[in-house]
Length: 191
Image 1 (cartoon, helix red, strand yellow):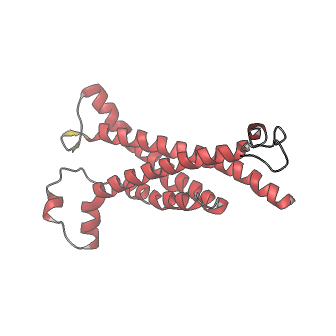
Image 2 (cartoon, rainbow, N blue to C red):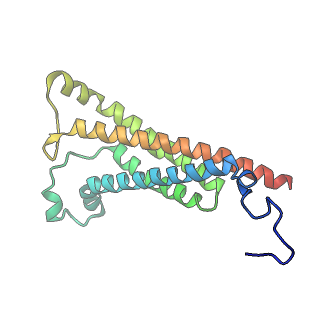
Image 3 (cartoon, helix red, strand yellow):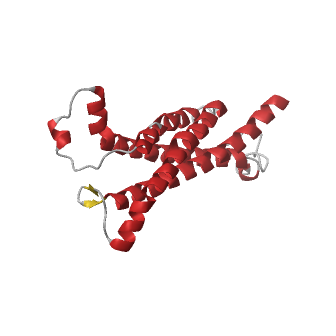
């Protein structure tokens, strides 16, 4: 496009923006860690839904509805206390999801506390509770319960391994987000 007063001075046509416009590193990392934490929390919620389906027969009988015919057909071992405690960690995951859009530090800290109390501690208890069964299965090839035809101890340790990894990564990503958000809040206070 021609200008009224001749040619445009070099460097003012917008082609030199690459060295002036860049996103700060903490904002890049915040965006990346938000996406990672969101994916991690979604997987935690899926795992919680699966656990809720697993403990559903006991929940239904506890409420007093009585076992539904379909629930009686499931070949599930008895529920343990740590399974109920771990299912509460879905509340922490929801708090983590709510903290992401507006960088809410308080909710993210609540998520971290809830993950440790209702996520990691029941998992550690579950590992301690199931370690004898795992030892018996590995050495003697015997097991006390089955889960849809598979040894329950193997299914539990697959679940516990996945859950501890999800909670560990979730805590790591939330720590990274807290670091980047605190820098941002310090900058706003200085202005």
